[in-house]
Length: 140
Image (cartoon, rainbow, N blue to C red):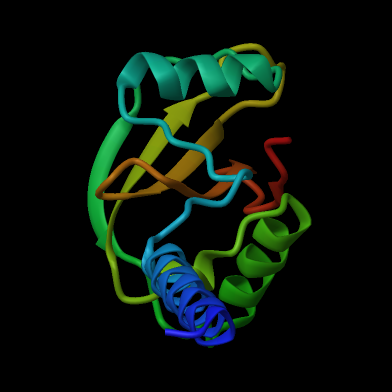
């Protein structure tokens, strides 16, 4: 075999191997660097504490992340999540868990911190709200 044919075959072989590697890498689910994973009660409470909220034990409820936020309250909640860098739409239709914590380090009565997490513990949304007025604010 001539050396130019050997070089051509070697280049083709390298190109094919590179193509297979790139396809494998693109198929892998690489988590975003901004993903917050809160799998335990301690991790969730610590995360809230790090953002200035002292909380009591939560109430836990199962829910589903909606595909569309149709109400004005839903749109307000979604906007609040976007302001904090969360993208709940990425998890539309997934099962989720809502944790509602009474906040204890404020003079405002009936203030709650709420975390919405996927079943895998990925933080999808967070808010602090007044049960009295219904006003929401960011956790961050």
